[in-house]
Image (cartoon, rainbow, N blue to C red):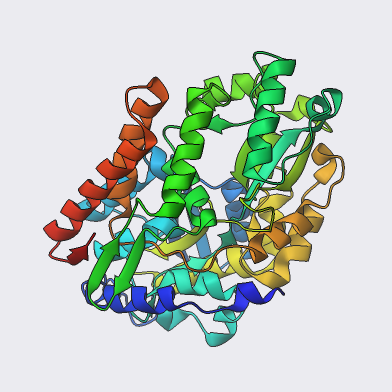
Length: 443
């Protein structure tokens, strides 16, 4: 395994320090009974589980078919930024939250700081922790406590229409300079064709770009949060994408919307800057285009491998659950067993890249790569994962940051606001929220 996966970072340590007070206010064991709500074969326990990740229902069905002491009742919810997180937060406040929920790494500190989750450390053995990428463990460990079971990593990836690129003699871009050239060539070859989309509702994609470039928005220094959304790396990414938008070299459509899907189907969008999980999205969305798509490393600024992480999921136990032990047992099964990975990936809708390194071969075998002409996409994911910049960390008010960016990015796509203006607005809103919560902040 590449050493960059195993490198601990100063950022992870300082985040733990800054969140120590927050996590001390977090959910306890939810009043769990002595057995942690773990059922027996004679008296099974029933869990409730909310998630949106592809293949989740298939995993639940497989678990229920093979387990007698724990049964899982699944409810599919909207993706986090599309309403899922609001639904979870509202349910926690109302006291009727499910036992287990999906939370992406960026939002985990937010839920911890709100006291919405339980420390799952008592139910995770060292043997289980050792299965996961150190970076995934770092991102789920705050204030010295474990707040979720990691599921997948999500390195950036570029998906492109091989037939279009080949027909028009367009080289797959290795750098962002080449990416702009390719965008210009695509538009010249077909005035309607665009090789990517700026998704105004999805700030996490822009954040992954900034992450890749070396930005560090949230930095903990003792008990103080240092915030910087206008460093040189971020401004470079902002100016670059502003130029693509101004010159109409990319689409501007809401992520995974009917408009976005229609553009992929009619060939007016011939590329997608996504993550490892995007392979399953395209395959399930565009079955008629099997064999026409290729997968490549995300372009970088200097041509050397580099990546941010776009999403990535964890399983967390809500503070009100009295079934933490059973919930973690199910979460661990989803994340660390071949049966769980096969159940999720085999149907073809998920291309999850497991945080459990040993399960990569099982994931690769379960995913039918025929849609991508048989390319070894998991080998590409592994290389991309090894190039993730380890310095980035998330803050306790990511929800505020992203809500503001989402609102402002909508204006960017309409032309009334610049990306740098959106970043400034997000900075100001985040500082205000940190201060409102009584936290020290600089920036």
